[in-house]
Length: 422
Image 1 (cartoon, one colour):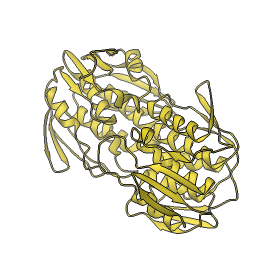
Image 2 (cartoon, one colour; image 1 turned 120 degrees about the horizontal axis):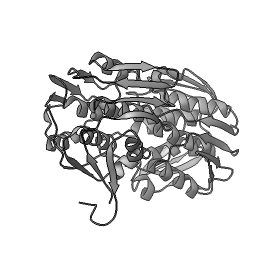
Image 3 (cartoon, helix red, strand yellow; image 1 turned 180 degrees about the vertical axis):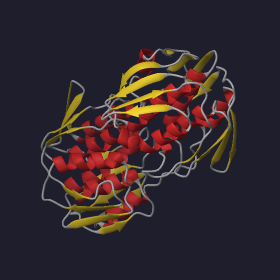
Image 4 (cartoon, one colour; image 1 turned 45 degrees about the vertical axis):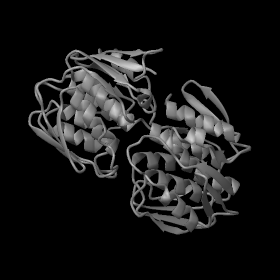
């Protein structure tokens, strides 16, 4: 099991290119199931979750061709509309195959999803929405078994905005009979990117990026080419790492508009930020102020940036508060940050972080994807050596993070082989 070794205290400096967004690429890979014609995705991120999704699609009969950072998917024949437990247990996004398989093949069998242990994240909204479109769904032996001769357009209101639920129903609705209207839909940029991909395939979609989406079903979709959007969470993570280390970096191939809420907070606490069409530069001189944030559905502060901001708060001037409203178990990084010398008290879903002068290196354990990123940031800040165990979580969502950080001047290396586990 791989580890990361970080010797902290060095400011990050330089330029870095942001990869394609994991949370956009995964549903767009599944969107290829909706057509018999080739779908080509550019800016494909090389991540564990992406590779797992491609393996899953390959088992279903999809042929994949990789070339120069892109992938072409040929789903002319879907031989096996099944997402087995062996793959789904490692990646929750496998549930995104359910809607496209049901719309295209009339049946699907998908294992109940796994992924990071950060909360319950129920799939009931996916199931209720597909049932409203006429699907017959049974839960049996840990699988979602769905059938529908032809999905029907419907009006469906989400109990709460669900990103993957919105994506699943959006994809299913593109081939349904009639018009589907999704109310209280999620508004994340990755959903807009998926809608753009589907539109390039011939889908008729209005309202992407708002809480009401209207989809007019078509008889069939065709092949297309699409460029996966930049990863806004990777962008935010590198910005916070630069702020934490008193650094100065510029991100390229990014999208400042998708990070407005994060940039606002970083500016408010005293960091200098400038943006271009696809660039963001950040510079920290001296101390920075404590801050207060509450995670919310987009366009609010993203839950996927909460852990990274908590790492930053450990050395802020004053007391910061971070309230998590999306996932009930997303503060498992607190105990690991405290091992590095952070002063954090948690009451309910709010963490109260009192800034300290200096963190100290220690051995810590990653518990989920974004917790891993927070420990990397803390290790970059800390005095001495930090060892991070279980970084397979990190590999799910960050492409070559140690190489990118090394290029910015960080003293970081991956340790592989026996003895690297815990």
